[in-house]
Image 1 (tube, one colour):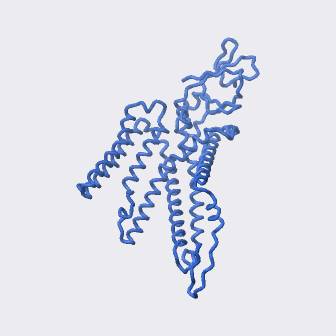
Image 2 (cartoon, one colour):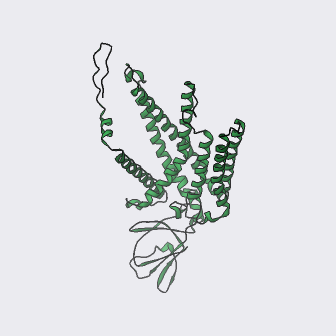
Image 3 (cartoon, rainbow, N blue to C red):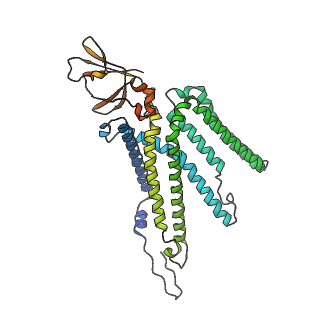
Length: 384
């Protein structure tokens, strides 16, 4: 680091690197990527564990989390993070567009000439496309994708923005589109994607409306708050970096507001608290509407299970679950497998409290759970 001269002609002392800057400089870029990937994976795994813990406690399961290492935690965490990113990414892009627009207006420059090509229409279109695909991938029941009423809207969801992009690309080079025509084309894309979204949710309207209010609205609100806090933190960090890199005689502490770091911490703590709120809302109001076949908590489409065991065996079926005896065996009622661990199986009566299709709608509809140890003396028949 080279030293600079002060007004008296004496060289300024070389400022040493901060400890964190020195530590980061010792880590190679490849190692930073691996560390970041490991941190994101661990955080996603933790999210999945917390969501399943809340969900199981709502059903009265107390020992289901005895197995700490389960791939299902990572799967559930990925579903949560994916939904959060579908909302967060457009918000962060919107904030960056507005911030850049304000900066370039002050400098009397054009954003496109400076290399900024993102616009609000493209951001909204991306958000709707992401939610359309997420809804089919996560919330659609088994076999739903093979329906032409789902395949056609998904195909149009991909084709409409692509064709609009080709139209703009072809005509912009020839200057054949006026500003009004561009705006009309953008509105057409947004309206078309919204229509496709309506068609995609049309087959599960009642379930999705039940999920959207109040859980979906609260999840959207908290995700927006997280995005606003994250965008504000990014802006404050940019201000700090910009002032730190400027060659000025004034000290950094004199240029930045006195509560600059306090504002960053305030936004970070707010984002963390809202993230925990998001987890709770997802676990209790959104996760129960994801089909169990896809790792969720909706047992409406799960095949029923029949248990059989000898009357004289040491491990028996709970008497409340026995339907009849046959050839010296207890035969259970049709059951639903709620959860399975290495040592325990958790079952519920498939017809209890209005049936398995009603369990997701309210905690009052949750069935009684029966814990049965894994044993070779109990035969389990899984029905499709």
